[in-house]
Image (cartoon, rainbow, N blue to C red; front, side):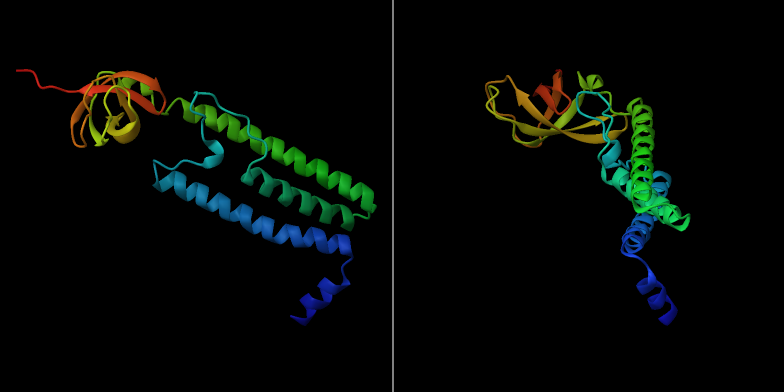
Length: 197
């Protein structure tokens, strides 16, 4: 412990800054890798917020995300430490570490962008909902008087959507409904599903 304390107090201010960033950011980066692999291996419904696809079907090139910032500080700090150990000046070290960190952020953003595009092909195809049967989860006001909620099974899993109806009467909770139109990714137009006689 004394050796560690002596080593720390012997460092210059810039060295302390780099080491102070390197250790927590590296631990966080390692934690993210572990949780990502565990999530991918054991949870088929796992969705990474950094990979989330926008509701309009587009995939955003997300540069400033938490994971990218962690990656920036990992490379920024370790490159800075290596540059200082190599005898570079303070200004040169800062420039090298900043450029390296930004390069790492760009690579990470590009990787997640490409992964997002792959995920897009397996995401919910909402247009398949038309004609399907579901259940009113929360009362749906008649005459498009407001949104209720429905539950619907699509592609083998249950999803919840906001729902409107053109019917004059409300659709009570628990009523079996049918989708007549997909308004957008989260909203459906429904009618009461009357069983055929």
